[in-house]
Length: 388
Image (cartoon, rainbow, N blue to C red; front, side, top):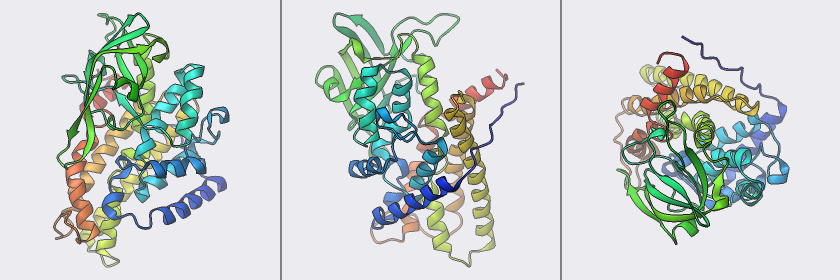
C-alpha cells in the first residue's frame, strides 16, 4: 500500500489578509440585499454583471500571466477570494467553470490563438463555459465515452451525446471530450481528445441542447445531442490523443477547491443565527463537529492549491478532498435538520433558516454526482494507494 501525502498548505501573510478584508468589504455592499435562499445556491447561482465586477477587481484569472489578462498573483490569494465568495453565497456561477478549470486547461494546452482569444475574456468575467464529459450509460466513467470526432474535409465531424452538462443552455464555449482514435486492450484511456467548441455556432449546425429539470424544478443540467457537427481544424485543444491526460489534469482543479465543502455553508450560518447564543448543548456539539471537519478539509484543499501552483499533479489528493467534502456537505443537511423543530419550506415569508434548509434538502443529493461520483472517486483513490 502506497502512502498518500499532502504538502503543507501555503501560510497566510499580510497581503492575503488585506485581500480578505477587501473582498469582505466588497461583498458587504454587493450582497446586502441578496436573500438567504439565493445565497444558498452557492457556486450554482450566476450573475453575468457580478462576474464582470469581479473581473474589474482583478479577481478572475488571478494566477495567469498578465499578457493573457491575468494578474500573476499566488494560489493562496486566489484561494482567499474563492472561499470568501462561497462563504458569503456570492453568485459566481456564470464564470465558475471557465475560471476554475477551462482557463487553466487552455493556458496549459491551447494554441497561441486560443489563449489570445479566450483567456482575457474569462479574466474580464465575460465568458461562461460548460464541460462535455458525462454520457448516457457511462456517467463519470470517462473512459467509456462514445462521442466520436473523425477527420473530415475542413476539420472534424462529431457525433454523440453528452448528459448532465451544467450551463450548456447559456454557455459561450464547451470543452468537449470525445474519441478520435481507438482504445487498446492495454490502455482504455487511449484515443481521446478535447475540443474547444463555440456553442453559438455549434447550435446552428449540428448541436441540440435540451433541458434536464431537477427535482427542485430548476434548470442547471442539459442533454446535448451532436449530429454531424463540423468543427474547424483549429478547434482541437492540445494534441490529438492527449485528451485523457488533459482531462485528468483539469479535474484536479475541479475537485479540490473550497466549493467541494462549502456548498452547504449557508445552512450552517443560518442555523447559528436561528439558535442564537443560547444554543442547546446537543446543537452546540453538532456545530463544533461540523466546524472542525470544515477546518480540516480547508487545510487539505489549500494544500492542493499549493501543489497545483508548484506544477504538481495532485489528482489523487483532489479526489480525496472532493469525496470527503461531498460527504460532509450532505451529512450537514441531515444533521442540521434534526437540531430544530423548524419546518423546511420555501414559501415566501418564512424564516431564512427554514427556506435554506428546504432548498438544500432537494439540492444536496447532487453534490456527490457533480464532478465525479463517489464510486469513481473511491476507485481513483484505491488505485492511487495500490489497493486495486
